Figure 1 (cartoon, rainbow, N blue to C red):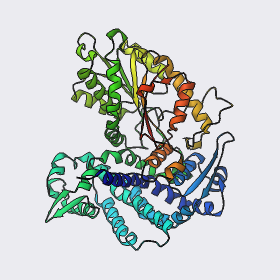
Figure 2: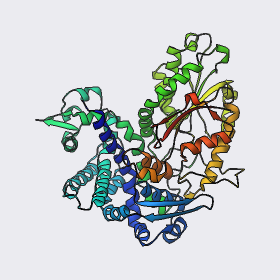
Figure 3: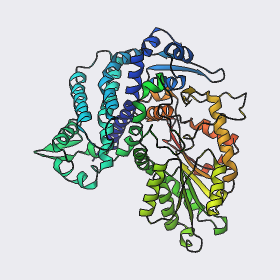
Length: 536
């Protein structure tokens, strides 16, 4: 049995793996383009760097903030005057030296894009083998005598380890390798994979990392391996953004719209949405329990004081909606009266793949719901659709959403506050153009003002993702997944702000959290997730 202290060590490694998935391609791209050399010369403004390298300022700013979160640069940000400066640190000088070692890891990320994301194929697997071989021979050397330099070397080592293991963990998880059968007994490669020769080599890589024990021709999970196997979905969201991360050359220094959808309902190319939904479903499960008490309280009220149902905006794979229905059915007064007072369930998503997955999962769970397309940025349009098609009033439902308000189409604020001086450290982008943080706050305020009329009576239950200052992240490497969140969301034009900024903007929009039902995760200054029930 793994102790709590041992779990903390393994979790630290997991977060460093996630750091690596975004930091390696970012740092290597900046090295190839000469940005590291420019930073080594002097303190640079984002405007100067954009001009010198003919870069897309927004994505370059995201990239540099990633380096800051790893402790390799420092950021000096003045939102009032809209100026940003970057300086390389001592660790950054060492990191610049080691960045060349990311080469084969980045090549693997790029090469894998040409192959099926759910299958093990020869060419990318051979590249993985080569990377692993180099990982063992070149990095398993005597430690650097300089303590700070050795810290950076170990940091880079963990990053490359993350690229070796992360995408593989996700592929195995989606394909069923972490089924209970394989976790509890020894197995042979032939039981699982049609190409046992390659799969044996893959399993031997995991043996090296002490995830499996090998005995004769059979394999069995170690306690360490089980720890990671049970958390495979924790890698899923970051790995799902590999289509974006393998195109940083174009995003930062070329065509910023290379991954942009052609229409609202067009298939996404910047993210593997099915993988993202799988990863999100597993990662979000931990928060579902927290909202149970809120749901029970609401649906235990006198029936005339209850909402007619629930609308889950950004329903993903339908897991949250299914969970809420089960809680209501089994634990509330409303659950006892469903025949007389049916629960109106509505799942809404911007992505067609997510809608298909939600429909299939809810049918499988024998839960009846309306599943429709909708845009979180246009609540009035959604309200009109619900009324016209189903005679449902949006304001009569409890509105819920998980990790969605930051992932809205950018709308320039119509009435910006000229006196605003944002306290956010975030790096925000729309189609390659850097967005002033003051405008991000104003846009978020107007977004919630648009929703306020529809959540006035029954409220908005929101689980949201947040950023943390890069300085704080750099001081807590391995204790937060913030670097991965910031990079994947920054490169894909999403707008995660710090918790204090989020709460301030809510109040500006006339929405206030119920203190009894407010939680942050983790419960510290490193919090990247909040849960709030807000009302007008």
